[in-house]
Image 1 (cartoon, rainbow, N blue to C red):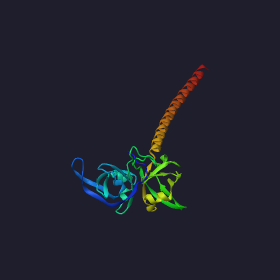
Image 2: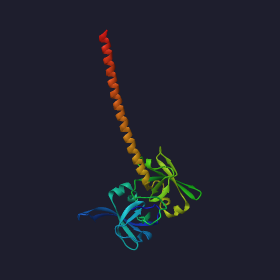
Image 3: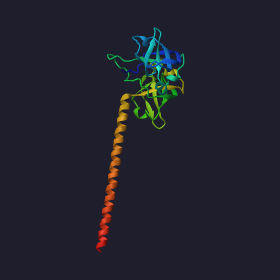
Image 4: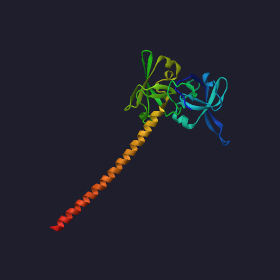
Length: 246
């Protein structure tokens, strides 16, 4: 199950509730975080247990009617994403999971948010809008110029990356500005970031390969040190033999 990063609509948060009596699998009660979101498109074909991306976060619909749906957010979700910042009246990007027969006009978005970045700057240029966003060392290796990144679930192209200062720039055309939540946010607010999964796999493979190479180099150094020790001992033995022969 994947998403495309092409936002289908902006929903409106109706309520944000920390419920203290959500039932667990074993019948016990525990605190939970529940979002109720009003929408139209995302409800088409909805069913209990279906996946809906909310600001790029893959969540499970637990309740719905003809006007809204509810999702529960796990503690890990709240740690990784900006969903804990939401309040009633906020807009959120919504996308249903992609059907196998659908075209993908964006890129493969898993809905597994890596982290929440911070909006650093908005800069208009013509009818387009530059957006600068911070990111951490964790996903920096997976973000490249002209590569994909999902920002609040929107498939976007990375235009510039500053690895020293840890930020990247992207540009929104006028149509996109009207369809997603990013322009509605302010400098200092957070956005969900998901690096391209292909980039993450490549970065992980490169890191593992580099680790293997480093280990091989360490082994070579150990062998060289032993070779040097043996050579030194041989030299000392030859010198001692020569001295005894005098």
